[in-house]
Length: 392
Image (cartoon, rainbow, N blue to C red; front, side, top):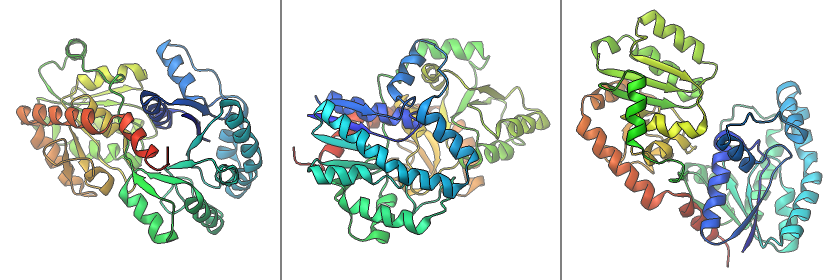
């Protein structure tokens, strides 16, 4: 079957990983997939550039324009532009469907983007939406036209052929607010085992380079932003680390919390126990994960599906994570990772330190986590779920 994957995102970071993952899963099942992106937001181009160690080109066209609008334009103006963009989007989708002979549209849902569903319904082409965002949940960028967004979303969720939610919490929120919605499935994130290959030799070499070969390495990979909780995690554990000289924190990433965290480490005089690498090339992430014994996910939210959780488990590493519904749905506590009560910061620290002293448990849980990804959470599994929403 010919499938058109349509998105209005920047195609970078976790968004790009997810788009490439689902696309790969569909192709593994024998389908032809074409991706319709904004100019300059092609996720597969990002992957090619990373593999070739090239510096990504500057954003151009619509992506640059939308990025600038997000930063410098009043919210109500930006939302009006998003609504007007439906006119352009309808023509782009129609052209792409005709050129690729698409028999189905799979779209990463964006607020105010209704034209795809309207056009697909008019042409009797099945369209399945992947729901990662909504006007019903907390958003970093606050909405101005909240009521209008709800009206659009209610119509979209009802008239699509099917909906793919990343968690049952997200599905329930939509059902409670909108009542009747299209048929839906729960499909958390997944991992690409071709991208996350366990390499003990590389891991040993990296640990030797970092002088942590005889240490218990607790890792974090992601943005250094407050809502991920890495700032408070370091702040609380900083005064305890000296009591555990065999523990090292290996923190990968960058962001607004990086400088404050760096300062806290200096203040506590634990620079020999906390390694801040900054950003690393995406293709090097698996090597750093291999060098860790287990990971930490200090915070999340009650509707999202954290990508890093699946990537850690794919590398045979368990994670200490808050028991928000989307995480508790995919983690068996003390079997494939470890859960603590969401919002209980001290419980997070206590569990992390306790696990750090049990190497056998770290290895067994990591082994179980890898098996779970292999058997249930590869991208082909997500592809099978979304295809179940249409009549082939």
